[in-house]
Image (spheres, rainbow, N blue to C red):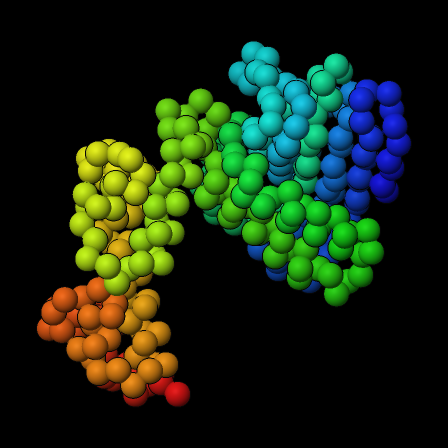
Length: 290
């Protein structure tokens, strides 16, 4: 179902609501049951008692205002915030009647073990902020298109899009009152992208830290928290990925591959490569080169 009309609240009201049949294949890691979008729909409000809903319930807010009840207290929710309720949790939330939110939502089942799902299970509701520019709205739009013209052959893509939403959210969200602002996370990820693209440079912790404007100490702490590894380990992994590409796609010598990948000494490169891959560079080239 998709309804669009001018509702007198200053914009076009959008109500997309899709209900999918149970998938023919029963072993998807995750699968949507209901999904949709409400925009300029001031009547949107829900209250579900404990045990009522047997699936996860994810809402992402891209505009407007609304609220959730968290621990018995009303919490304001606006652009760039969201909530995830686990199966069977008490739920109470709704749109602000005067500034109706633009919210995209999905009810789904999953057997995945992701940190945000585990947090929702443990706390009976995960409330978070996220980066609205992370492409999540586009992923939802693709799910809407497949749902509107549903065919059984769409099932794998629907499952894959939902998985991409969850993992993208995992990388681009944080608890609602986290001490690390979303801007800081974006700054660290931008630094990581530059390091990846220029991994052949002679990086130091200080030069990597300058990319984000933080001291070396704070950069190290933030990078480890946000990326799940130290800057040094991340840089080494990027260099090894570049080295593997050069080994299988060029005729450069091992010494030249080492230098092009940012390893100043061939002996150190060979040692690190063997530790990571279980075989030396020349043997890797023979096994995987064209």
